View 1 (tube, one colour):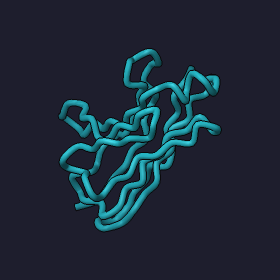
View 2 (cartoon, rainbow, N blue to C red):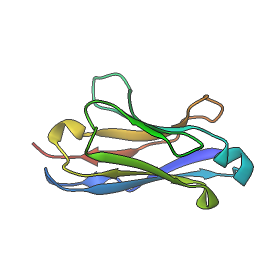
View 3 (cartoon, rainbow, N blue to C red):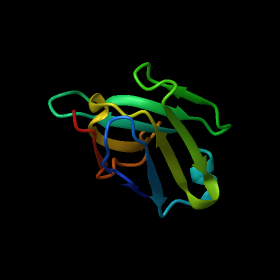
View 4 (cartoon, rainbow, N blue to C red):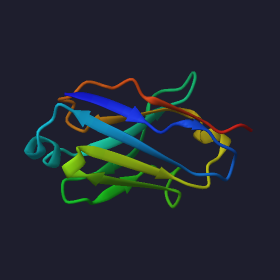
Length: 116
């Protein structure tokens, strides 16, 4: 299975973006049974857990993004989404999705840039 992120770009502070992550090659039962995460890594910093969605669609968020980001999933499309709003310069990072149990490898990520 290959995780492929998309949807990043350059956005002004206060703007919004929607990131997508498709698990290419996964079967429905495998994807729908997986807890999925979004992480981000800013230059010179460690990778940070941003959001998690369970198989029952329960969600958790890092303190820095609570109230601004929303994680969701479409099992039929084998895709996880991250809706980001009220973006800040400190949200600038490469964003990655990840299977929580680590069974699938990291994808290439998608760059989000919010100029200061």
